Length: 495
Image (tube, rainbow, N blue to C red; front, top):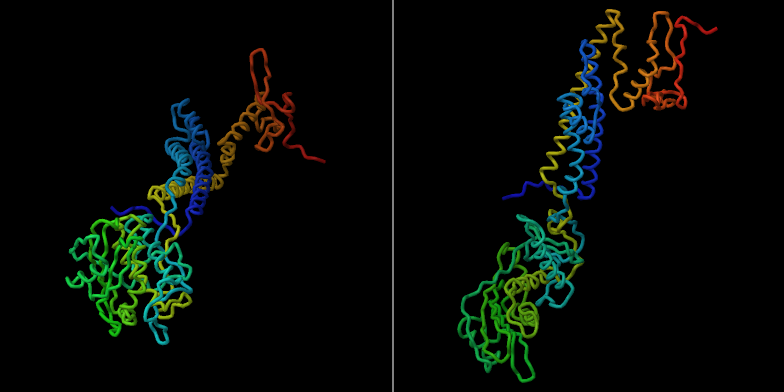
């Protein structure tokens, strides 16, 4: 089943920071607008002549305070709608950071890297050719390593992504360990097929005897096929590998197949079991055959034969490797690339400007759909809350305009609606200052001084016990002494 995760080119660490900042800003705006909605919804009810239940006067609360109000009052703070928004916001606050940490992960995936210089299979005019590509040069090393790197990345990258092994158009000069061959990189590959004819030979039979027998029975192209083996001091042999070219002679500069016979056993003193593979080129054969046609294949296989033991076996005393077949194919791929690249790593890619990049693995990031849904949900509830706030503002503005036309100043009566801890302290201070029996706008035309009208005026107020016998505490001014209310005629004018 294909993964539903979303892949991003952005680094996972940076993406986590960006998402955390997004949630912080979104939740901050949601709390700020939500607080205004709590105040405005209460004002709307007051303007309509209704009383407002105390649970709707809590202002915007966070997780713990929401739980306290629900437990103590058995009602949602702010009313049903705003109360649900507070609960949802509280849950988002608690879960968003965990979700970002757990659902945004780094991942290694195939990508593209810019190509500058390297081993390039360039068969334009003026290209140097070899009768036998060097087997021990640096180009052979990076051509072999590039295939190993590309194959190994398949154990790291997730399906259905794949790094391909084959004959590459180009390989970066440094043999990039992050190399990951893609479809544009690969011209084709050598494929070796077991012919299904395994034969046993006694320890007394020499490599020449075995080679001759294989040729006679159609399992080698010619009698003097090239071979490599390990010989001890007594003349016993092991790790015998024999191969030959279908071109038959170096006089024939033509595309060729290779027949390879390998010893499956580990010891020098027991019978040998020889398995034979038929190897041929597949893929874009029309682009690979010109490279093969430049080789003297018989001489080339003779030059590259000593390397067979290293790719087919895993050291002294070991039987044929489990990776013998793919290693053999990669060895032939390497030989072809060195020939096609003229044994140099200093070539620009000028044959085809559409291939100025090569496949490589890059660090990317993957996002679980849940984190995307969470981010969208946060945005949606912010928009809904903002629209609700605008509607409330519109209602109050419409009411104020109507009252202004009628000459009614009742809108001023809803200014001191508490909606936060500090505004409730202000309300308590105002009520405490007015307990003397005086009220705003007394009939005698005086006003009350010492009554705080703004939250900034609370700096000189304290909370103190004013009746220790009955345990009564109240809001007081000036270091615990109850400040007397100052009265002044509203008609008084300063000289």
